[in-house]
Length: 91
Image (tube, rainbow, N blue to C red; front, side):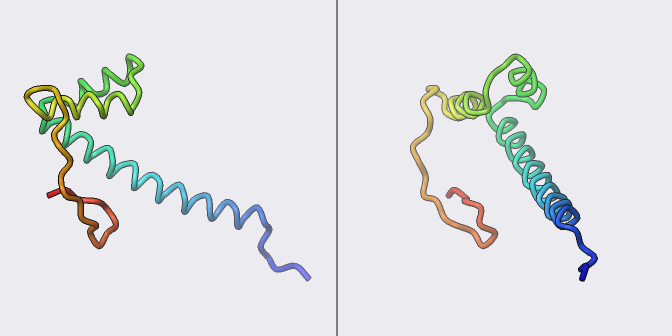
């Protein structure tokens, strides 16, 4: 007896949910990265230009971190706490 649901339709539904969650998390991450870049003096346009020129995300993050201290040496690690929404915040 058929259940009315094919395995493919279930996979498509799960894929859609996964894509929506991923899109939302990616959007939040990009917004945070842009805010951080602006805080250390790097515009979104500059970050886009660096990415377009082939810099990796890892190297972009290292570049932004180096801009966060006057000496170019990353700041010492700060105490981390886990918020209720599961994101780590720094004090």
